[in-house]
Each structure stands twice: as C-alpha cells, then as structure tokens.
Figure 1: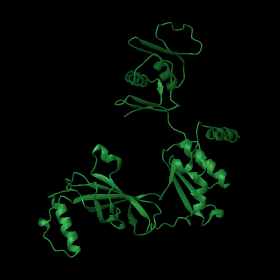
Figure 2 (figure 1 turned 90 degrees about the vertical axis):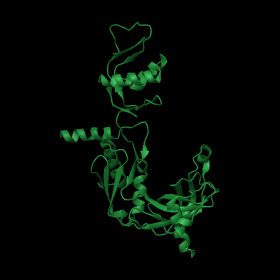
Figure 3 (figure 1 turned 30 degrees about the vertical axis):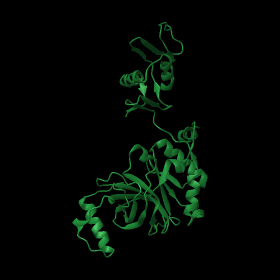
Figure 4 (figure 1 turned 45 degrees about the vertical axis):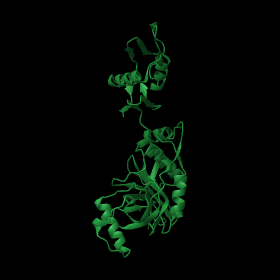
Length: 335
C-alpha cells in the first residue's frame, strides 16, 4: 500500500516541469547510427610555387602517380614547388549511399607554404577497416581562414563521391537502443515513462543512466523508421547536476540554476557579505554589504557581488573559497 501511495508522487517528481524541454533526438543518439571517419593520402597540384619542393615522400608520390599514367620517371628526379602532399579527411554519414557527395578537408603534411589555388587529385578515402568508401578530387577553397594566414588547410565542397552503400538493416530491427549524451538517472526515468505513454505499453526500459532499450511494438513491426521518428519527436525535460564552471584564463563563470549555497559570511579586503536567514536577529549594518537569504542560488549571490563592483577574478576566488568551505552545493569545475 505504501508503494502504491508513493508511486504517483514519484511520477509527479519525474514529470516536474522544467524551464525548458528538449526533443529526445537532441539529447540522445541511436546505437549504431553514427558517422564514420574517412582518411586518405593525396597530392595537390597547380600551386603557385608554394608546394613541398624537395620533400622525399612528395617526389615518390608524384613518380608513382606518373608511372600509373604511363610516364616512367626516377622518384628522385621529380622536384616541383607546385606540388604538395596532403591528408584528406571526411565524415561518412550513417546512411550514406553510393553516388552521394561529401565535403572533404585537405591539410598539408609537408613544408608547403600554401594550398591556395591548388587542385586535389583523385584520392581514395578509407575507413578504419582499410576499405575504400569514397574517392575525392577537386579544387581547394581556403575560405575565411586564409585571411589569418592559415593557408595550409582547405576544403573541397562536395569533393568526394561515396562509392558504396552503408548497409544497415534498420527498419526490421526488433530492438533499438538510445544513448543519452549526458547520462542522468532522472532524465532516463523521465524518458522511459514518456516513451511508454506515447507507445501505449511497457516497451522502453532503462538499463542504466545512459542507456534506454526500446522493444519494437507489434504495430511498428518492419517500420523502424516510423517508430524512431515518433520517439525522437518526444519532448523530455532533461535533468542535470548542479555545477559551476570557471575559466580562470578568461574570467568566465557559468552557473547552473540548481546550484545553492548554505548560510555563510564572506569577507575579502573591504568587501563583507553575509548570507543569513529570512528573519535575522542582528541585521548587518556594514558599509559594503549584500544580504541574501540562506539557500538562494549562487546566481543571486553573484548578482549581489556584481552590484558591489566585485571583479571577475575576485568572484572566481570567492566561489572557490565557498566551495572549499563546503557551503557551495554543486560541482565546481575549473577549466
């Protein structure tokens, strides 16, 4: 009876309204549905004297390429400042199909001064299993980064063509697994309750704080695409830990809305701040004082300190000291 009495309370807590909700597709990913990284070694030609020059591997690569084209040369005799050796990278989409284009990034690996104006020659793109999944070729664009002197990295928009389909038996799956980007027990519990409500049965279970398993309902058999479209559109209120993130180099302080502080008095130089109860017996009468109720958020304290003209550097020091005193209830992360 006690469990039955507490169950509605638990559900009410799990479904407590937050300041913002997110679609399940934005806070999780489907296991096995991801991009694959591709890499290749290629040659860029047509440079205006900004190539690798006497680089050994560039000369051998050029000799090997010309040999395939029917031109027999000694590798050591190929010297040109108009040629550069590069590494070509790209991301292959989860459901990439043969014939679809890909954007590729080209990066110099020799002593080339610039790839501006160059042409990438046909380059096989391999996955981690050494199999070729795409072939890249095209004119290199340096873009805005070239204005800042970064001319050894460029892009070739739609510069690669996928050579084979990414095979995946998706629609007929009997089970799907979602992985939360930020593992959290409350978020996982909210997600499975919302999914089961949407599907009208007990189809979703949480394996841990990051993993949600979904059994395909009979009504969605061989309709995995429609099932995932329904589930990914579900709104879930993600929960998170109370956290303060500090970047000492830039003086940036990011504070979560759940961070709270206990009753504490702070003193630093001419600054004196006291956090007290709502009905203090002895009001503070010092010249520079910010009075804040106990249990308020750190954001309220920061606003009070800002009104007193506290610098970002002093604010960071104060937050670290409050955490050391055990009065800041939340994680303090220093970048």
